Every structure is written in C-alpha cells, then in structure tokens.
Image (cartoon, rainbow, N blue to C red; front, side, top):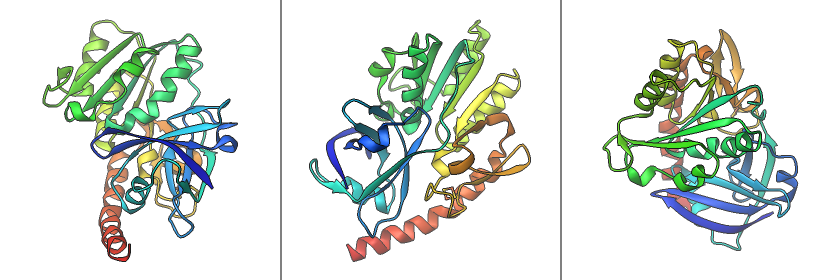
Length: 275
Ligand code: FES
C-alpha cells in the first residue's frame, strides 16, 4: 500500500500525484517508469517517473485522466492509499555523452523530459527546452524548467502562450540559427514525435523518443507495446521505453495505438456502470 501524500491539478484533466514510495525511488533514475494499481481488482497502469526525492522517499507522477483507471485514481484524496506501486522499471536514459541537448515536450510529454532536465543540469550538459501544446492551458512547468535549462521556448498552436506554431517550427529555427545540438530528446503524441524525427533525419541529428504512451500493462505480458525498431520487433516496456527515433516505424505504432482506443472506451463505460 502506498499513501497519496499530495495531489495537484496542473491542467485540465492533468494531475500531479505525490506518493510515499521509498522502496521504489531508492534506485530510480530518469527515463524509468512505475506500474500502479489503484486497488486490488484494478488493472496495472504504467506511469513515467516525473520526479523523486530519495531522502524523503517520495515519488511524483503526472497523470492525464483519460481512461477507466486514471479516473479511479483521480477520485482518491490526499491520505488515501493505492494498492501497490512497482518499480523502477524500464531502462534509464543515458545522455552523458552529449554536449548540448534540446528536450522537447508535447503536452504531458513534459513529465518525461522533466527528470532529464534535472540530470543534464547536474552533469553540466547544456540543455534547452521546447514545450508545445494546443493552447496555454496545456503548457506545464515552464518556470520549473527555467531552473535547469539555458533557454525555455513555449509554442502553442493558437498562440495563446509563447509563440504561435509547433515544436518543429521552433526546432528548425534554432538549428538554422546555429544552435549546435548533438541530441534531440522528444516526448509527446506519436504524431509529434514522428514529425520531429522526420525533420531531424534531414540533419542526421541523433534523436531519442519515449514510447511510454503505447504501454498498457508495463510488465511485458500484454504485447500492447510491440513496435518495430530498425526492422526488429521490440517491446517498449522491456526494451525501452526510449529508442532511436530514426529507426522506429511510426506509422505502424500509430495504427496499433488506435486499436486500443475503442477497447478503452468500452471499458470506461462498463466501469462507470459498475462503480
Ligand atoms: Fe504490455 Fe509492454 S506494455 S507488453
């Protein structure tokens, strides 16, 4: 059982949760994830580790309330308990070879790049951050990122915050005006990551993305996170969640992700009736 210590609404349908989870955070590293069950009958749901404090034994995750289990989680109050949290899982990120990195977070993708920004700052690696979203209500942690990054750029589709445009527009501008990044690390919707990857391919610029969004049970049992990387079959939860973007078959991943949308909708409706 893990106690929910703190709950904070960050955007519409996006909540930051802080749990007491000393055993999980003891060995946690940026890029890894946990699997949480709200109650004993609940499904196992993977979440990226957003932040952790090893001394206090606390773990933060950022959750978009979109499905049955995340709705159940959203109904918990501070002081309540979840059944269990397992982790850390997945391979940690290693950007120690880099000299200058640009982190790109689309919407809730900010949750994945956040721990990276802290690690890079600590390692004295230059880092810029580009945050992108549909509108200002989905831009999160801008001030927080300023503590770790040299520059934080905000892009919104409608121009309601930062500049009007998307993250690729900004990346193109930065590269064309001399920002000599050696790694791009991008996390967000599959379409966004595909667009970033297609763009950086033209510069042969190393690009890493996280496929955390396609994971379902997170423990290698369901097969839901299967993807093709460099012509080989991989599983995001076991072999990733991070991969070389230029090797990923994004079209296949996008098609597979759509297969589960109907199932999730049906599950949500069934759950609402039984709750
Ligand atoms: Fe189920 Fe990877 S998430 S096999």
